[in-house]
Length: 410
Image 1 (cartoon, rainbow, N blue to C red):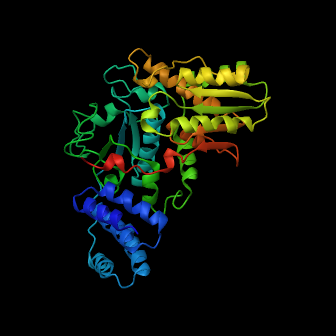
Image 2: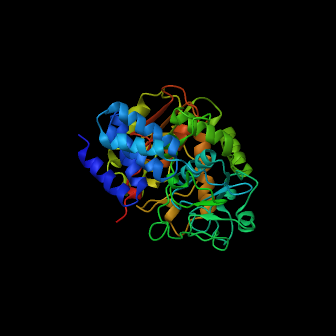
Image 3: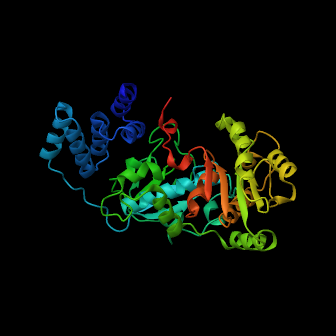
């Protein structure tokens, strides 16, 4: 049943592309938890990244699933005979510098959350720095765009990391002189596409993550001693969000003022709809947008509709259908197939604040309806502990899916 996927995984692991191999094997195990071949490959991956305790777990589960599998038995035997030599940890604190992913706002924040989980797993102090490749900064060299939107997640800065005496760095493409650089072999070349699993057992004092790291990808690597081990993914997101994500005061004030002026007079539903460039990513976008109307029409018609959208045409269409029930913030939108954050004329910092204001106001709604393939909707779905039936996503949440595509090298 899974022959083609297993052949792909074997080839990926053999070529050193462990991240692609892992995604395929995890997807197989999700559907067939006793698939010995996929479990064996996960054990091989764990050995190669230096997490031998988890490797033993995968090999043992695979052996129980298929007691006659010689490959599994040999891998487990070799692991048992292997005398593990513990590497000496680098002296002092260890750090994880997470750089900007460089795409949509909440896509970048989901990358931050993945790296924060990686820092928890590897016992590193997290440092977030969005450089000039962030689509939501002011373009000034050396400026941290993350701090324009959120409070720092730790007291350590990129400047502090660059000034560390005798620091060692991973991956090797990084050093004290280029930590502020953006897009260094990000997609191609030495140390490119560095997924989170490659960092799991590294002992260098400074680890630098510039590629996408997803919470869903790292959850299986949580050590048994961590309080999040074995917890549902939404609970993991809630833990990370509550511990680390704190919007800057100006965003909090904007939310309070708009809520007081426009949304504080009774129940309302928040509705997030995507248009513009999302049609290039989601070939079912038009059908999904059509399906919103049936969901909205099930809601009490006295409720107001707080509409979040980047698309001026969608805003006009919704206003035409629902009239003065529609409430929107005054923000930058587009009437073209180009996403707002890619328009050369926009104020990028303001665009970030606008999407944050929309998002955090949506969390005050009594109901939420969104598009699961959008990072905005998917993030709203996890930013709040919604009760059953309060939040509805059309399609599966992008935050709950592994992304094989980004790990496949041409």
